Length: 192
Image 1 (cartoon, rainbow, N blue to C red):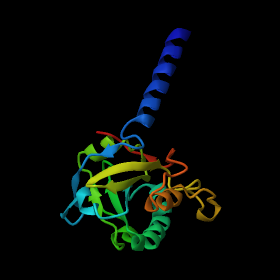
Image 2 (cartoon, rainbow, N blue to C red; image 1 turned 90 degrees about the vertical axis):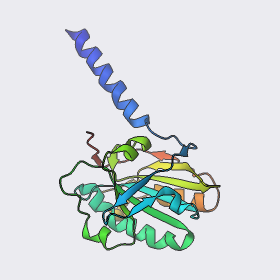
Image 3 (spheres, rainbow, N blue to C red; image 1 turned 135 degrees about the vertical axis):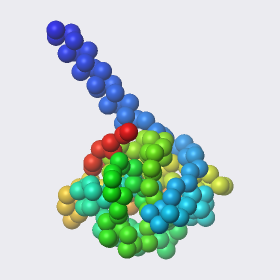
Image 4 (cartoon, helix red, strand yellow; image 1 turned 180 degrees about the vertical axis):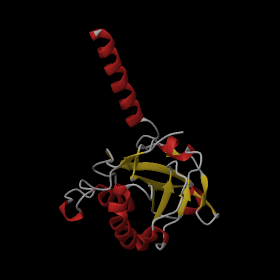
């Protein structure tokens, strides 16, 4: 009986590790994709080829963690939009209500719906919010950072490590981020 528990535990740990390492890896090129926005407009990753960086944010309007990060993401967008950075929000969650929070809907962020969760699975996103920093290069997009926005989702003023901000600073100056991956904290993305 102990062997069955041990085998089950090892299997669960293996599956968890595979889920954490799935998707694009740092330095890989990201496949082009297009999605519909909440206003039924098509947006494509290629639309942002002229940017210095693209931040793909997988989020869910109903996730408390995503709600805690809304203001911080808006601040980062305000700070970096003039520096050539484009933010793209993607809703990967299964929901009967695909509405967006008022603060995101009122912002300048493109907000797309990943209806069949194909894009979130390609990226390997497991949480909301989870960010992926892409660097456009000659018509392609290379992954430079993935994971957490910072080290304190609950209290913005207590965050000591602004992972996303640091990654953006590095990418827009054509440097490699010192930290390229940090595990995101948030709501689990439920899969079909």
